[in-house]
Image 1 (cartoon, rainbow, N blue to C red):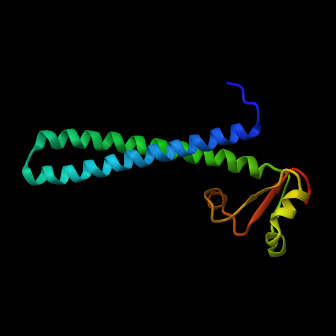
Image 2: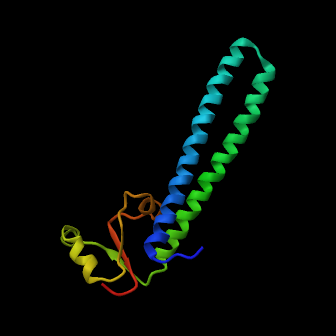
Image 3: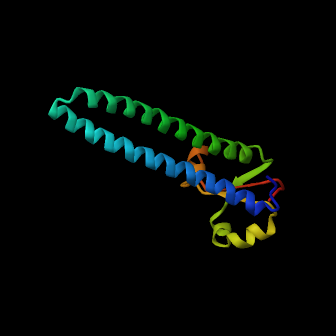
Length: 135
């Protein structure tokens, strides 16, 4: 598959992340439903169906764990790419007020907020900028 622009690549990556998130949500909903059915089976003493639900529950839990790990690896790759950039520094309050001007003046600047998933994973305390050139 050949991509013509960077925007297509980014949009494809975002769709992949959303797809994994949707799969995790779907499997979590099925797991919740299975747990509620298991509670009903205990009260009715239906051991055969309970054993089937127990197997399904174990399979769902392993699938959810696999998808969450896969999603965290993607975040880790993105974080590693930013950490490898030669220049990084905290963004001052004055620069945050006019972030558009800063982004225009520094080509390739990537700003990570500490409250985003990427920022939490990287352990950031302040809004931080990453760039290939000094800023």
